[in-house]
Image (cartoon, rainbow, N blue to C red; front, side):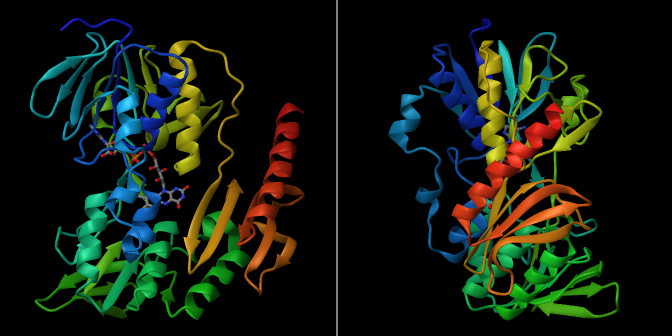
Length: 394
Ligand SMILES: Cc1cc2nc3c(=O)[nH]c(=O)nc-3n(C[C@H](O)[C@H](O)[C@H](O)COP(=O)(O)OP(=O)(O)OC[C@H]3O[C@@H](n4cnc5c(N)ncnc54)[C@H](O)[C@@H]3O)c2cc1C
């Protein structure tokens, strides 16, 4: 097969992949775009998987990022169930899991991340992770026959799953090694507020404990913790962060760190290879930064589409924004998280669960957090962006 610079291959079929393709078409790119995804589902949105999809309020059709007509308009060559296993940057070829090789002119790596596994835990119908729609379907089915669930992890996935489980009227224990829920992002004070929020909704939360073993019997699964106690339940859901599959990129000679090392416009160490979304580890001068959130994936896709076509742009890199929904509250955050952040309430009241707060380290505002205050958050976010831009310029 011939390949020329007009052909763009995108590996991955998630949010960053489809937004890159949309960006390219929006900028007038008329060449061929091949998209290789190892999933069977056309591009879909992941945030609802732990929220409305899990509670049954949304079905698979409602997850798709584009309807069939809009997808067809993009004129993409979408190859589903097509895992890419190797990359030959010199010959500009990809190898698929079935052994076929395919050429590319330029390549976009949009392979996202995978749910991190708990070490030593064998796969089982009673142990669940949540990253893909298949994971979510399996969990939803299992929940229909369960009454007690143990969730491991108090990051936003674990907390959202716990919230959805309570919404379904089931019992849930959440255990985590961290000192408090989302503590590395929101700091101690707001983490305590999150503990109170979950407790008030019937979640039994235990932090600062490690899982020492998980044992299954014919009827249940028992999680034993480092403090000697154990939690017995029908199912375990593990939400302990993500890892990224980097081996094939490393073997191809690309620079990798915690992720695929890219500049803010998605350029990698190979001039014909770009990275977008959760796979990216942003190289910002002396530091490598991870931005694994929905809005960051969109921002990186937009910037990379311009870079692929050599078009100047004025889009700022992502500001670290993300949102989460727990017990009917919309929680929004922007900035850099810190365990020991001080909290200054800007509006509303923490006790009433409707507020906007600055997170501060000494005299520096490092982030903004809001609960059920989208309008006020927007204002505070703008001010925070201005302050960050001014301090970077200065
Ligand atoms: C349950 C859940 C809830 C979330 N909720 C929120 C939220 O509330 N707010 C927020 O800001 N963010 C949220 N996120 C994060 C957000 O969804 C991600 O940041 C976003 O999906 C990243 O998009 P991506 O395209 O980079 O990666 P992904 O969405 O992971 O897509 C990558 C795709 O590439 C495929 N792939 C991987 N390797 C290969 C290969 N070798 N060959 C072919 N295909 C491959 C994968 O199967 C996948 O389809 C949530 C994530 C999950 C899992």
